[in-house]
Image (cartoon, rainbow, N blue to C red):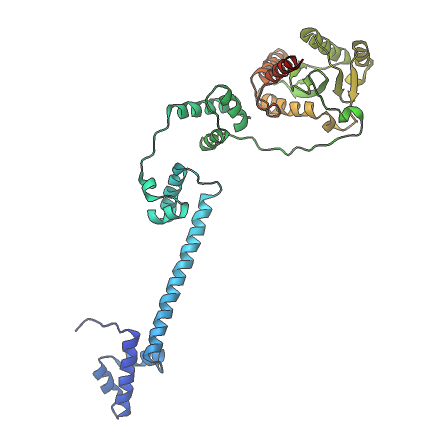
Length: 376
């Protein structure tokens, strides 16, 4: 028995026309099917599918079927491209290395050809096949330093890490630091939306224009491992953002607060023009009011229940909580006092400050004094 023939639509219609002529001349269906070399079921199937059509109609039907198949393939390819683009998620593929990794991911997960994956991500196939250049020594040193900065300061983001690396001469471009920070998978603190509010009082609207014009102070609370309370008196220069004190004690009276302020004035040899603070009992007591009067300092009290009016000190409290109190466990009061003082010195002399263009508070104050001396 010979191999089964597959008829084209044109051949089917021609045989149907020939068979209809034979039937019209009086031939039987069995005889017609034998002459056409087909079976009777095939004849009936052809009549149901192509009956009444001409060869041109069959050709047009075949073209439509091919066009339909082509359109289906295009839609399927587009849907697959959309799925692959979603797999790449967010971020621009701006470097050959990133595009090379993207092509590898698409080929592994979607089983597509290298040609198609390269076309989707915009990578030339010769660039895809070119071996990756080893990282330079400077790049390796920068990566190691970023890891070290992140390990030592887990609540810092890439901006402060860039300020440290730039200070040490390891990097200049901020985009490069950010790219490496993300590639290394280093932790980035969640952003906090800041609210800016202003009250009607004179001191609430006042903004420092020079060092020691406005000091701000506030209290914070934490505990040691035995559950006993520790209070911190934080004093900040609003213009230079310098932490003047982070004094820890079990409790603070008005006299203890005055003693801390006296110690700061004696050590620094300078006093503020104004002191911004809230309406707590330690700060409204006669002892502190008398100290302000005798020292020639103007007390600037904020409105009750309005901590945003003491925004600089509140911001410092947030950094102090986030980078120190939440990361340390304290056994004794003496340990708290030593560690808090160490953190204060590091904050003033090492940690870059975003509002000071990446300078430390100490460096910012020195630069301001130098500039004033040059102008005078």
